[in-house]
Image (cartoon, rainbow, N blue to C red):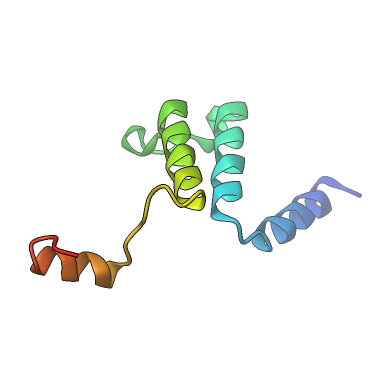
Length: 84
């Protein structure tokens, strides 16, 4: 398999991934491993600590310790002074 075929296969597999957390982790690994290729704007860089905090927030949500609000819920809460 040549390089072009390998890249295409990798892109097709990546496109089938639906887990946002997994996608973000893969992006973090790629940024860390290949910073010269994955470099974006300096303002867009997320530190390892920020990723860890995000992953912890997701884990808390999955354990039921924290509730995330939908956009509609957030707007309703904002309009009512955050009264549930």
